[in-house]
Length: 222
Image (tube, rainbow, N blue to C red; front, side, top):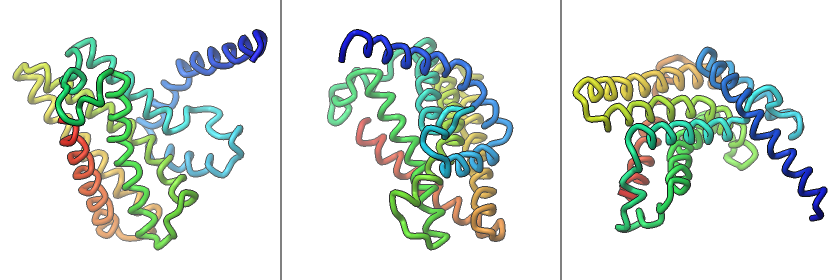
């Protein structure tokens, strides 16, 4: 790569990173106000060519990643470094930097997205392939990012150890799960064209599978 190609690459990288300052708040606001519409929007975008996808928002996985980075930055500022980063016991020794911790967290939260998407395909009796899984996984990443923000805020409050912060953090965590579960029920109703009772059953099953998977992963690194 010659010097001019390097400059061009840096120019494109700088523009991409700076554009996040504009499109992250836009994506966050739209997902907060209209989460189901944003999930539908992601499904539609998957039908476009790659260079035409998500032109007015951030892509769902990128939105999830940036959300986790922001939450982690707040955690570092208010609480300090997570114990798993400094621990050298067992698999936690693999998480030696904050970057490693962010990667572990994006895998953990992505479990919600992939298991919800998998549950939908199985309920619709659609063959599970990389192609069929992609669209529902991407749409789930938008709302999982909000779940990560809410859970991250709850964790920070709990770790502050003040009585009011502990109560608020626990309440926020339960509220986040309730919101997420309600949203997933509506999502299954929309895509399965079924009763709310059946949709609730599918959403609850996927929620339990996701929470168990996350807890098992967390225990490996605790």
